[in-house]
Image 1 (cartoon, one colour):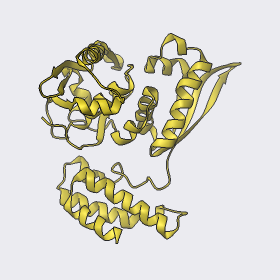
Image 2: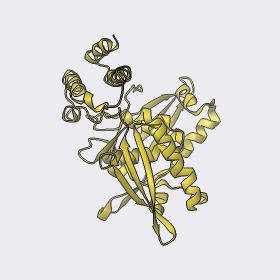
Image 3: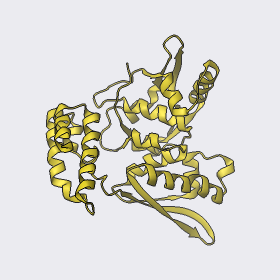
Length: 297
């Protein structure tokens, strides 16, 4: 199958909180594969990437040797999913990574063991937009952002430092809290605040003199309230018709326009156009494209 322009990543809570470590490029590859999964899919497909797309993401050229190294690394890396009283699952992300030199493409397949955590999800799952993930350069910022998307409606996320280091599988060189704070926590906070729809901050929790926990505060940025996460959820989740979904979106815009506060008319118009562009592209829908033309006048 050819890679589409789908941008919404949906994964189960269990997978979102699994223990694993991926590089920045590996994270982008996996997230793009997840974005290709549709609500009605009952099995995984083969996901195809142009080498030129990967080179653009990495900012460097890839030859046969570097691609083979990438393939071996991605095949080698495991993730651990805690299944509670049922036990645990240790598996890989991909079952195969194939390079087609003549087409300038690679083909990847998910490990079948991941089906319960990516296919036909009901209830306990988290959504994120890969365009926000792609904006982040730190592998830890990418991972932490998806975790925060699970907790954004609650607004806080508290976790033990050692537990988080294990979840993120940070190297031994970053187990010292000062290094962990500088290279992981501060970097993630700065990048997420600058590049995504979230605004985050944290306070340190001490046991005696030792910092043992982190309490994060997570907020949706002003002007980012109107996203695919909030629009006509019942229509989206039941696979409703695009026309129905678009009409629901337009009503949602009218209803929530007052939530865009503290802006003059020019800024408000720019915000509305940005929202229209987001959904018109994501749904490839003529109703929204026509509404976008009217909004730009």
